[in-house]
Structures are given as C-alpha cells and as structure tokens.
Amino acid sequence: MAKEGAEKADETEQMIEKEGGKEAGEGSGSLRAGDTKEMRAVLLSGFGGLNKLRVSKKVMPEPQEGELKIRVKACGLNFIDLMVRQGNIDNPPKTPLVPGFECSGIIEALGDSVAGFEIGDRVMAFVNYNAWAEVVCTPVEFVYKIPDDMSFSEAAAFPMNFVTAYMMLFEVANLREGMSVLVHSAGGGVGQAVAQLCSTIPGVTVFGTASSFKHEAIKDSVTHLFDRNADYVQEVKRISAEGVDIVLDCLCGENTGKGLSLLKPLGTYILYGSSNMVTGETKSFFSFAKSWWQVEKVNPIKLYEENKVIAGFSLLNLLFKQGRSGLIKGIMDKLITLYNEKKIKPLVDSLWALEEMSRTIQVFAESEYTSVADLGRSELSSDLNEYSGTHFSTACSTLFKGLQSI
Ligand SMILES: NC(=O)c1ccc[n+]([C@@H]2O[C@H](COP(=O)([O-])OP(=O)(O)OC[C@H]3O[C@@H](n4cnc5c(N)ncnc54)[C@H](OP(=O)(O)O)[C@@H]3O)[C@@H](O)[C@H]2O)c1
Image 1: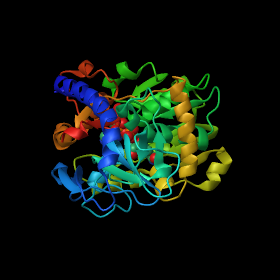
Image 2 (image 1 turned 90 degrees about the horizontal axis):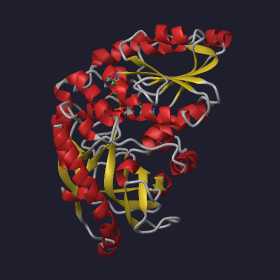
Image 3 (image 1 turned 180 degrees about the vertical axis):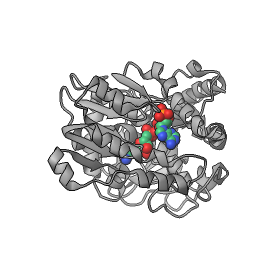
Image 4 (image 1 turned 135 degrees about the horizontal axis):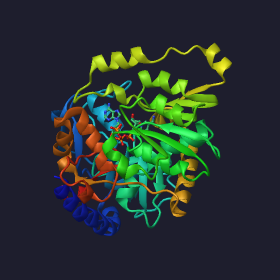
C-alpha cells in the first residue's frame, strides 16, 4: 500500500508541477463572465462515516468582488477535516458541503477590486470550506504568494500548521529564549510545525507526546519524547521538576488538568483542539461527554494565586469569524521569511488523487483508532518507502494529488 502510494505520489507531484505552468496561461483566456462550467469536488453528503464522501460534479465558482479564483493543484487534509466529516465541530454548516480549509494553486481569474495579484500567480490560500475541489474562489485577504522554491504540495501543507503553531507560540504564549514547551501529537502537522518553530529560538526545550512508532522519525525535532500513553506528567517532572513554560493541548479532557499542573509560575496553557473526542468513524456522544466531564473546572482565584495563564486558540474562528486576516497576513509574511531562510519547511508525507479520497480514508478507518495513528506516521516523512508494509493513509499535511486528472 505504501509503495503504491509512493509511486503515485511521485507521478502526481511531477504532474502537478508540469501542469501548473501550462494551466496558468490557459485558464484565464477561456473564461468569460457568464460562463457556467463544471468542476469536480469532494462532496460530503451528510455528517457521519466514509460513505458520506464522494467525488461529484459541481458548478465551477466565479470570483465575486474582492475574490480570487484559484485552479487548485493541491489541498491539505487536516485533523479538523476529520472532525467536520463526523459533524464533530461547533455549529457545523449544512450538508451537502465540500470540505477543506487550505489549498495551493494558480490564480485563474480576479474579481473586481482585487489588487496585488495577477493571473498565473502561484498561491496558497485559506478557504472557508470548499478547498477539496478543482477550483476555489476565496477573498484576496486569505491568499498568499508561494515562494519560488516551494512546491504546490508543500504550500498546501503550510498555512494551517505553521500559522497555528506560530500564533500559539509567539502571539499567545510569548515564547522566548530558554523556555520549555510541551506539545501533544508531536508527530502531526501542527506538532512538527511547533517543533520547527521552537528550534528557531535558542535554548528552547520541547517535550512531546506521540505514538512510539513515530519516535524514531521525529526524535531530532523533539528534545524529550514520550509515548502517548505514558504518564507524561511524571516523565516531564522527572526531567524538569518545576514543569514547563508553555503547554499546547490539542487533546482536551483529562489532559487539561494535567497540562495546568505542569505549568511553571507565569506559564501559559493553550487549548487548541479536542482530539480525544474522536474515537471512531462517526461522532461519538460518549467520547464527547467523557472529554467534557474530564476537563478540569478552573477557579480563577487559583490561577491568580499560582500565576498561571489559560488561553484558547482557534485559527479558523480568528480568520473567518473574528476578522483577523490582517494579523494572519503579517504572520504568513514572517513564516515565508523563515521558510526562505531555510529555518522551517512543511513536511509532506503523501499525495493522493482526489478520487482516491474515500479509499485512502477507508484504509485508516478500517483499523479505527490505531489507524489514525498510522495516519500520523504517514505524515512524518516525504520518503514514503520508509513506511512500506504499513498502512499508508491520508492525514493532516497530506495532499490530494493530480486534481487535473480526475
Ligand atoms: N485550534 C486551531 O486553530 C487548530 C489548527 C490546526 C489543528 N488543530 C488541532 O490540532 C490537533 C492536531 O491537528 P493536526 O492537523 O496537526 O493533526 P494530525 O497531523 O492529523 O495528527 C493527528 C495525530 O493526533 C494524534 N491523536 C491524538 N488523539 C487522537 C485521536 N483521538 N484520534 C486520532 N489521532 C489522535 C495521533 O498521533 P499520536 O498517536 O502520535 O498521538 C495522530 O496521528 C487536532 O486536535 C486539531 O484539531 C487546531
């Protein structure tokens, strides 16, 4: 399975790059206002299991005022997409819908009043749903030019993971020289972005939890790695009796109390996910209730006495509900500078065709929980052959390949 995926990924990556240049010039010329064209997209017909996803034809969108039309070359599959599929998110939109929050591609048309971009520009973008399609339209404030040496596949794995990591470390927690950070799911897309960004600041110690089989692959990026099932509170305290300066918690449930207990005075705990609520193919009310019940009830007076900070972070809300695209644009500029200085690099594990969507997700769904861990494994390296013989599946930082071939 992994080998098959690896071969296809190579082929498709070449295809993406080759087709990229060609389509940049072609697309715009053939499009006129009033044209109704079709495109393919992955459609989620209702919340639930894998059978709710299929590739379908849809009317191709045209850019409205202030929007850019992007011919998608690659799009990211993040953990949040898994939660969307299950309906495991706050205020889920109505189905049917096209999932996906980030993509890369080539600008094919400009809406009125758009400045700073031209047809043919290589870009990466946030999209408020609809990224898993051949063409997307999104407001110009969510679009960023891709550095020359960044591939489309890297670009589709870049914005969500790195902006989330950067915002939490530098804007919310104020990471500085010599501090220590605990991050869960350290082998995942955000986890690896956190580790890379921490390495840009001298003397930062990173504690991470991840499934043991990933440790070999990520050991160089994380100072102290613990198995996800280990008693990490004891392990951290054994190494650093005072605890850590920053806890990044994407698990929630019982980990909230554990994270708070590990904070040094003036330390910051940030909740940014609730992975513990995901336990199977469909939404589980039991997992939701259990996670909710286990969250430590925090007394603000205790926080003041102990000098601790609790924060929450949601990039999608910041972007799409709270109007902070200007702030995120500034962060993207900083991240692109770090990329150009070769201090950070998005990790792409695998590329899959759009129509392979259901099959690839099926692979990990079949073995339920552990299979999702396998997803993480597939994220860790762009060398797919490294994982031959294991289930090789899509996950965060994983891109759909070959959209032009569907
Ligand atoms: N708030 C925001 O703005 C924001 C933005 C992006 C992501 N996130 C959150 O950050 C977390 C990581 O996202 P990602 O996209 O980086 O994930 P990812 O790359 O898909 O990594 C997923 C990893 O999470 C671990 N995990 C922990 N609990 C799990 C569960 N119940 N089911 C499956 N896997 C589980 C597994 O690693 P191990 O087995 O090694 O533990 C898995 O490989 C998610 O909770 C996501 O919702 C939040």
